Image (cartoon, rainbow, N blue to C red; front, side, top):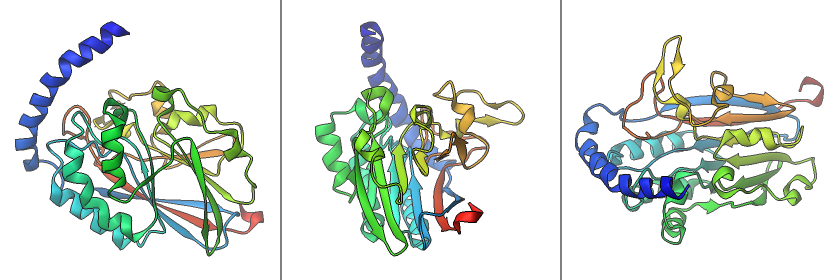
Length: 280
């Protein structure tokens, strides 16, 4: 492990130089705004609908343009969300790019309560520097923590966990012991956390990390996914296992290189739709 870490330390400056070169030319081919994926989640635990905007894997880099962020914010505001939810990986290889990009999200974060969790890339930086920068844009980070949020249609139990593989952590049992009448929503950067949940633990988990494969070939599918179980979460907007549901966002940004194929950058709008108990 120490050899791998030393190799990473050696390669990172070289990669940052390459990233800076990409940043100058990527503006010519990158999309000017993300696509929108709409997800409807029926529930008997709410009596009025809730609209959630789910953002993930921004990966701030030299190629992240201000006009792309402004278009993302405008599209999200047009949805009139009740909650803004982020599932990690805010920067790519150099956290300094967040200082340029994250303040542009402040109008969105002021429009609705905004909660977030950290992804694996976020632990490549000194959190004492990175977290204040992110929080200044209006986010509240949930780190093995939860909140009870009240809406006209009922209460929502919102929990969040750091990247569980990097931090070797789990949600505290107190989260799962809260009254089950509430809609239980969990944020986890890695969708694989689904396999650690007891049956019927959550009504919905929101995740990212996979970028949908980022480069997806017809028939073959993605050549690489950063998870051995990654294909489990591709295809349908909702994956269900033992009563637990997860939506895996396709990501706003890019990893390694600013290229996507058959998998455009995407933000999700998740609508929690009340239904009678007998129709669930």
